[in-house]
Length: 239
Ligand code: ADP
Ligand code: ADP
Image 1 (cartoon, rainbow, N blue to C red):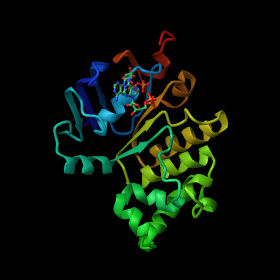
Image 2 (image 1 turned 180 degrees about the horizontal axis):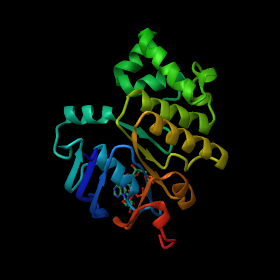
Image 3 (image 1 turned 45 degrees about the horizontal axis):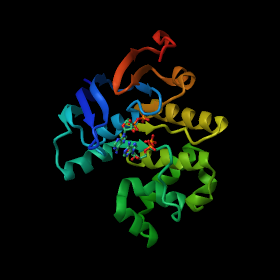
């Protein structure tokens, strides 16, 4: 069964911008999908419609068999717990420790208060530490987030997504703010972790060469429409 179905999805922003038009695709468990397309193509809007940061204008987003475009705020929260999000600009809380940022994803605002008061459970902390070890950040776990390099910040971003124990990870241009060496480390971590933990991934990128290297499937979008959907080996250079 597909983990995600996107059906006739359309997003028109309030200023009339048609960001997505008639988007259709299905995602199966274990796929590592890279969405490529130029800036302004609608990649970010697509991911935001999937985790409901943006409300679609029409069409359906079906996650694990359930339509999520018409659910209430409480259920949106529940769905978001199962969908890990990784951002271009990391979206960390600068003044908090690495561990606290990681647990923030799972525990939300309550987590922030708990962390500030030193009230995380041993189990929570042990789990955060285990995840941080996987991405090579053990030594940094009690540093403040704003003391890290960009590549390290994104490894915290990945760890935060993982702490939610997601079924699906959505990464929106996760390497666009990073140098080539850090970019490779980050893509390797996302790819390896998704494979090991059987997490399905949709990663927005604008670099075709990076997409070709990691994707099990590439979706090309341009001006809000899907113009390619298939195996990397079938991708022609006209995107
Ligand atoms: P990409 O991620 O591929 O760069 P986006 O999804 O960010 O594309 O943007 C798609 C189009 O929608 C662009 O024309 C962009 O300017 C527009 N857009 C994005 N967000 C908004 C918004 N909040 N309001 C109006 N237009 C927006
Ligand atoms: P990104 O490509 O990383 O989404 P942008 O600079 O395009 O970064 O967008 C930053 C924020 O502004 C996003 O929340 C996006 O939805 C919003 N945005 C983008 N384009 C527009 C637009 N034309 N009008 C209003 N908001 C926009």
